[in-house]
Image (cartoon, rainbow, N blue to C red; front, side, top):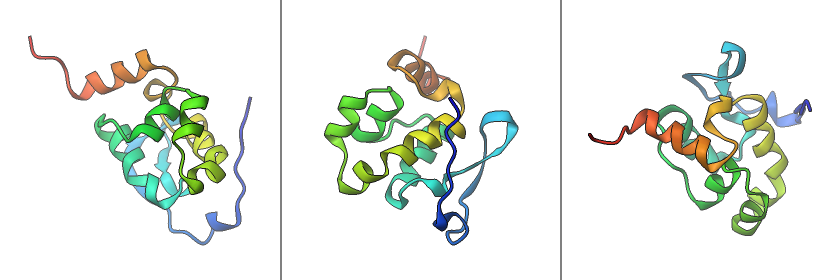
Length: 112
């Protein structure tokens, strides 16, 4: 399954480029995400800091939870948000609770 994104605002909004590397060694471009979701996604991907309830449901691949927690903007942009994680984010940072726990623990290892 290959999800593509073609939106008129991709050429209008400046790309938020970061030092994190996503799929295929490409820099991660957060601009497809709703503006109020970019910092949470960036903190999650780059620092392993869990985002809010909505985005946590998304990275856990919990559609029911995501829809139930979405505000009106995220509900309308859910396809873009899922496309971002599928196409751009490292595969090991999303998909199910076990994968996300492992991602978090890369940044916050448990004390011995």
